[in-house]
Image (cartoon, rainbow, N blue to C red; front, side, top):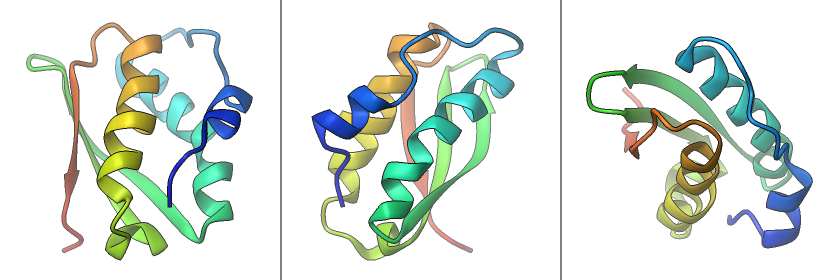
Amino acid sequence: MTLTRTRMNDATTSAPTGPARERIEEVLASLRPAIRADGGDIELVDFDDRSGIVRIRMVGACYACPMSSLTLKAGIEQRLRMLIPEVRSVESVETG
């Protein structure tokens, strides 16, 4: 599952306002329809405001998808870093 450039362009491009965690949730919510269309979903697990690392859990079809790392870095991380300056990196955590 990958977020195509068209789907990414359909997602919000205006920067959300408020605390970083809330802004991250807003951006993830804007990406969810494209991810859910492929049978997956993402959950915000943690945001470390000191390091700028966002940790998400990929579930459903995303969990075992061989393209999930591309979705994570080229889709989710790129969008978060573009809209939320505090975000430096996005990591996937295992379901547990």
